[in-house]
Structure formats: structure tokens, C-alpha cells
Amino acid sequence: MTRGPIILFEGLDRTGKSTQTESLVDALRRVGIGAELFRFPNRETGLGKMINAYLTGGSLNDETAHLLFSANRWECKDALVASSEAGNAVVIDRYIFSGVAYSAAKGLEREWCVSPDLGLPSPDIVIFFKFKDTAKATERGQYGEERYEKVEFQKLVRHEFEKFEEESSGSWNVVYVDDKPIAEVAEEVWQIVGSVCEKGIEDEIRPFQW
Ligand code: 2DT
Ligand code: MG
Image (cartoon, rainbow, N blue to C red; front, side, top):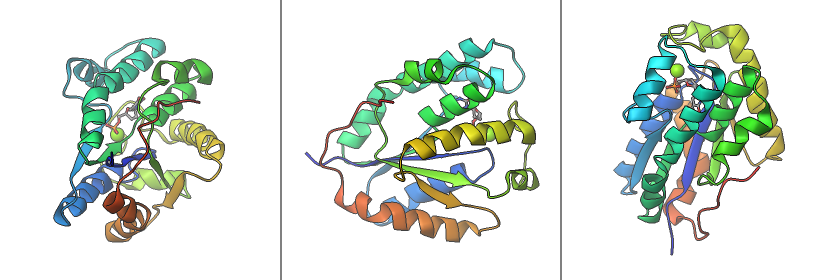
């Protein structure tokens, strides 16, 4: 059975993940390839509404917030698997690595942070959006409105993401987004994913391990 690839976009706030994931889904559909966007946190579900309240000023202890984000991925697992198996390219805007990076940046133990996500569907391709200069993010629109959008904290999160990048031994695709026009980033993304989306994936979905 050929299934659609699971393509994950990770990165700090304001790197353009939402813009690029939406535009990739549109581009795929325009050339006749089925595609579906999953975005985490998914703020539409019951758990997602609790997460939204937390991100916009509510209070939860760090462990509880972490487990809510993870549960929010688990509740979408069946839909995500079904979409890939139906042949869609499954495009994901943040996932496991955001979950661990933001919580570990707050000081929770990394291994503890990974454990609730073990077994979730693994991405086939990871694209990591980065600024060469983290402070660049502050120049972009709407920065600073939500809980984590502070330069010092973003530096810690970046460090956590980079641990995963290193552990991937080169399999993560790093795209630098500083000052690049949206179309240029989209073109780089297409170079990475276009042919895989056309061909599909033969292997079964792997459970996430660490
Ligand atoms: P968006 O700005 O992308 O909506 O994310 N976050 C996200 C976590 O702390 N843990 C997670 O598991 C996920 C998926 C990153 C809102 C914020 O939520 C953070 C930024
Ligand atoms: Mg955000």
C-alpha cells in the first residue's frame, strides 16, 4: 500500500510555519495531490480550548500543560493516520519536537517530556525553520502577544530544538528564513517534498521512538 508522506514543520514562533504549511497544502492540491493540514496545538477540540486559555494567560503547572499538549496530539492520531493511509500528504504545523522543546526550555527534564509522545506516528520528513539571528522574530508581526514570545525564552527553545536536529544526524532539513521572501522559502520547501509527495511512501507509519 502506498500512503501519503507525513511532513512536519518545526521551528520557533514567527518563522513562517503557518504561512508555509498552508501554502504547501494549496500547492499540492493545485497539482492534484491530496493534502491535509494538521496544526498543533489543535485549538478546536475540548483539550485545545484548555490549551488556548493557557496560552492566552491562564495558569497551569508546567507538567499539566505539557501533558495537555501531548494528549492533544494523541486525540488527533487516528485522523492523521487515516489521512496518510488515504493517500494524502499530511502536513503538520508543530508536533512532538515543539512539545518537548518548549517544556524542556522551562526546565522540565527532557526524557520525561518525550515519554508521553512515544508511539505517536513519526514524521517521514522534518523541515526545521530557523533564523540565523533569533532576534529577527521580534521584527515580524504580532510577536509578543502570547506566553512564549519573548526573545530570551526563544533562545532556550532554539537550543532544545537544535538537540533534536543534532540527534537526527542530518536527516532534518534546515531552512533559514531570515529576510527570505515567502515565495523563496516555498520553493525550498518544494524542492524537499515535491517528489516524495508525487511518489508516496511504501513503508508503514513508524511509531515515534527516541
Ligand atoms: P502556535 O503559535 O504554533 O499556535 O503555538 N507549544 C506547542 C508547546 O508548548 N507545546 C506543544 O506541544 C506545542 C505543539 C509553542 C502556540 C505555542 O504553543 C507552544 C507556541
Ligand atoms: Mg505562536
